[in-house]
Length: 88
Figure 1 (cartoon, helix red, strand yellow):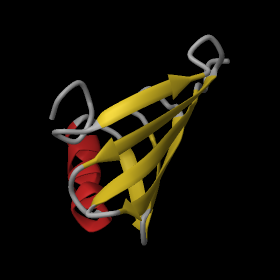
Figure 2: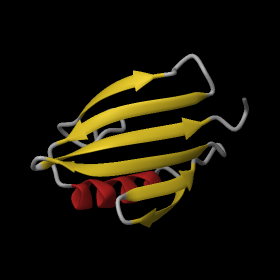
Figure 3: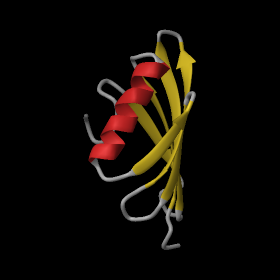
Figure 4: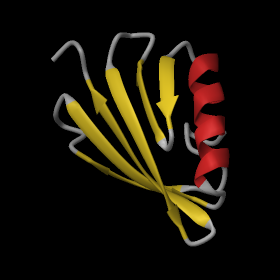
């Protein structure tokens, strides 16, 4: 776990000024491993989530809704994390 990302991953962030944030990232592992890692890590951080295939939907412990969509990208994963601030 490195700054909230799968180890070895990279990210680009858009919309940080607004109440909706989208974060695109890559990870070196296949989607199944990345999904399992995020589900476990989010639970450890107090978030509630459910997984259907390569999509994870949930709510942070602060009440903000999020989605995480994962897709195979060569031997790794390309992902999009979207967060909607509930206080906006």
